[in-house]
Length: 470
Image (tube, rainbow, N blue to C red):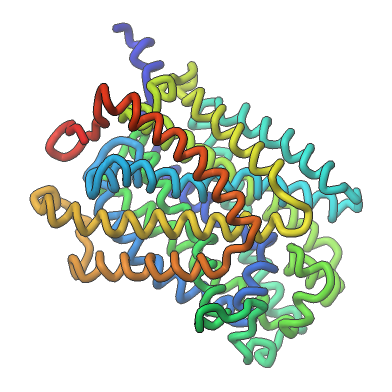
């Protein structure tokens, strides 16, 4: 086989650690300037506290991911961990669940981008026009996703750091605007969510804030292309969580003091862009809200699309490699980009856009992401405990073994099971419909694999003991 043939047969090791970190961080850090109204309606002036608590809750999960990620050297993440921890059926389920969160991002983000453009420049686009433009943007993202990985990660890094810079600067400007007051932060636990099953609405809202944190699990999807020791993945996984958590806490503390809960969410602000609206209406600012919005919405959300799009394509590619999907999913183009996974992702994203309605799509997407992500994390934490008990020898030279051992792993599992339960309490009809359609596609594929492909050959996972069949 020629070197050219080898190059075109799969993913290539070319990514520096900094770019894997920016893929994860860029995936996480995107929703601040659009879904700020969702966050604030869920957790009120105490949104910054909810983010602080969620950061602490997510860290054990990130540490467990950091522990198991170096054991496996190919893309797949949840697919691999849950297959090894349980079996191929749970592996398929976990990967499909995490992709429910990832796949929700592109349609949600492009709708946000188009809505922002229409609102900012007074275009008055109807929901139908917004959908059409969103479809055009998704096709453009697909075409870019077929280019060289270096182009994608460098473009994402530029978008990410521009977003972080303007967000931090906006927080400082709000804090020293002369309109900020501690009195506005005093009533921390105001929320628009009703209690459910005896659980306060604020707690349910905090659980739903898992969505602005998911993305660190994209790191294991990039290890196959990383040119660094897999033990270094902890820096990217935990670094992305801490970076975003710190900015979230600071930013929403600055926002909370601007005015009362009711005032900040009054009028059109409840439909998104709450902070931008506050800067315009409460502070009378004209130029900075436009600059901040353009950078945070257009560039920040582009960074997120790239991160989750790349990760989803690699998960589907890994499923093809490991016989969870037909082998055709492993075909790559001349830029080593998976062809069918990218096409499949485009098709699902377009379907999600066409299913949404004009009034609830923002919350539907948000809640769907939260639920899918929480369920996948919960399964993975259970698998992490099982893997460690079945193969303690794999951890002998692992520099990232979690402090506290099984206590930390079980704590992470309990945290995620709790969050997954709370997320079910916040789901609306639109979220369940989207989730049902998506899972229905997964069930059809799974049944086909069980009835036909897996009868002929099992799935193959590369483990520390070599390739094993499950």
